[in-house]
Image 1 (tube, rainbow over the protein chains, first blue to last red):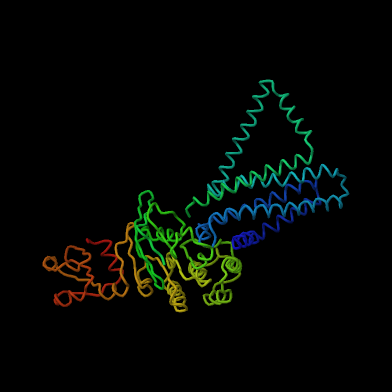
Image 2 (cartoon, rainbow over the protein chains, first blue to last red):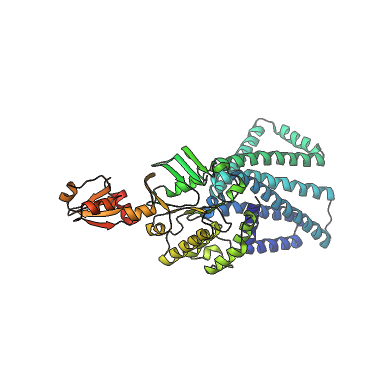
Length: 219
Length: 282
C-alpha cells in the first residue's frame, strides 16, 4: 500500500501549476477578504485534488497496470480513503491556521465559539462528500461518476423542495420550524459529536462498499 | 509455475477456452491475430479478470490469493497500460522503490540511460518506442521470477523491436531460471526468443509446440492437386489449395523429404505456420 500512497503523492505533486495557483489564490483570499471563506475553499480544492488521483488512475487504462503492482483491489480502495481523508484534514488544518493568522493581521473581531463551530463542522462535511464520491467514481469511472453524482444531487434537491412545499400545503410549516428550533437547543459539543459520528459511520459504510466494488471489478 | 486448466472466459461474441502449462525457467510465446484472446489469457493469469469457469494457478495459487510477497515476484508489461502519463521517470522510480523491496534503482537508472530515456520529461512526451521500452524496463526492475509481457513490441519499428527483445534476452541471461510469458502477433519476435509457442485463434489453442520443433521439423510442401491426391497425409497438419497448386504444412518434414524426393519441400517459418493453421484446411 506504501507504493499506492507514493503514487498518489507524486500525482498531486505532478500538478505543479495547479498547486501553485491553488496556494496563491488561498493566500490572497486569506488576507484580502472574509477569512472564514478560506476554511471552506482550501479543503474543497484539496478534496478535488485528492479525488483527481482516481481520474489519473483511470486515464489511459492505467488501472489495469496498477492492479498488477503488489497490492490487492481492496487495498486500492482503502488507500483512497486514507489518502483522501489525510489530505483534506491536513489542508483543513492549514486553512485554520491561515484563518487565525488573517484574523490577527486584519484585527478582525470574532466570537471564538462561533468560529470554532463553523470551522469544526466544515471537515465532516467534506469527508462526507468524499464518502459519497469514492464508491460512485470507482463503480462508474470518474467521468460517469460525476454524472451519477449530479443526478443524485438533483434528485435530492427536488425531493427537498417537493417535501418542503408539501409540508407547507399541509400546514406543517410550524412543525418544520419547531424541529429547527429544537436542533438549535442541542449543545455545540453535541452537534459536533453527532456530525463526526455520522461522518464516521458514512465513511465506514462507504469504504466497505468501495472494497466490494473493487473486488468485483475486472480490469 | 503457471497452469490454466480448461480456462473459459465469455464475452459477448467471444469465448476463450484454453489449457496451458508453463513450467519454471521457460520462455513461452503466445501468438495469434489481434482479438484472438492473447490479452484475455494474460489478464486471467494476472487475476485482472475472473474466469467464467476453469482454473488458473500461478505459483500453485489462484492469482487473487497471491500474497504481496508473491506478487513482488511477477513483473508485468501490459500493452497500452502503465504509469500515469503525467509522471516523469523520477516519479516512476519513487513509486517502484515504494512497491518492490528488490527494486534496484542504480540498475534501473543505468538501463533507462542506456535506452536514452529522459528522466525529466513526462511520459506523455515520450515516443511510442520509449514508452514501450519503459514498460518492459519497469517489469524487469525488481528481479521478478516471472515476467508477463503483453505485446511489448506492437506498433514499433524494427529497431525499437530489436532493442526491446535484446533487453529481454539480457534479463534472461542474468538468471536462467526466470520465466517469461510473452504475447505477440509478430512471429519473428518470438522465433528467436521462445522455448515454446502457443498459437491461439478465436479463443482456442490451435497449436502448442517447442520452437525448435516448429522450425526444425515443420515444413511446407508445394505440389499439384494430383500429387496432393496421392500424398500420404499422415503428417499433414494443414493445407491450402489455390487455382494452380496445393501448399501443405507438415509436422514431419523429413518423412516427406525421404519418401517424396520430387516434391518441393521448404523450411517453415512461424508466419507460414500461422497462415496455414489459421487460414488453411486442417
